[in-house]
Amino acid sequence: MKAIYPGSFDPITYGHIDIIERASKIFDELVIVIMHNDEKKGFFSMEERIDMVRKCIENYDNVTVEIGYGLTVDYAKKIGATVLVRGIRAVSDYEYEMQLATANMTLAEDVHTIFLLSKPEYSFLSSSTAKSIAKNKGDLKAFVPDYVAEKLKEKFQ
Ligand code: ADP
Image 1 (cartoon, rainbow, N blue to C red):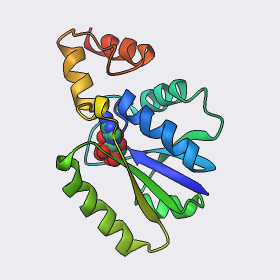
Image 2: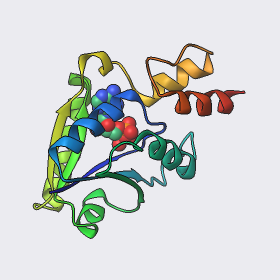
Image 3: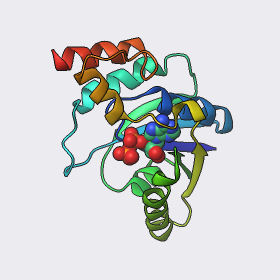
């Protein structure tokens, strides 16, 4: 079974990587899709984000990364994925994720959203947190892999 894991990944964190690792064991194929969003100007460019994700998934042979356009469910259908993976950190994620999943269910009944709960040690972790820590020159080691930490530091220099 083929699944997609869509998101902004701006940048990828250990929280995302944990979801990727677990989803890669559940599904035959996992495609991380960095969704293009015209309304949200990212911190990193799409090329920078895809480069960082690639570095982090080098050791998973059933995981790939692509840039996606348009509606996530249309993209899933286009590449033949029937499952859409999302991560939930805390109750605060639930409402937004439920809205998205319900809209997607209405748009495409053959694409099923599956949620994986964040590990407790990553339930506080978001791309925004990593960016704030980098901006204030904090230690990023518990939040993102070294490669991503370097890219964050370069951006704030
Ligand atoms: P989006 O902008 O679509 O929310 P993100 O890149 O922020 O994209 O997140 C992609 C998915 O990964 C979302 O389902 C989000 O809840 C989940 N996620 C983000 N950080 C974590 C984390 N620390 N633990 C588990 N899931 C996470």
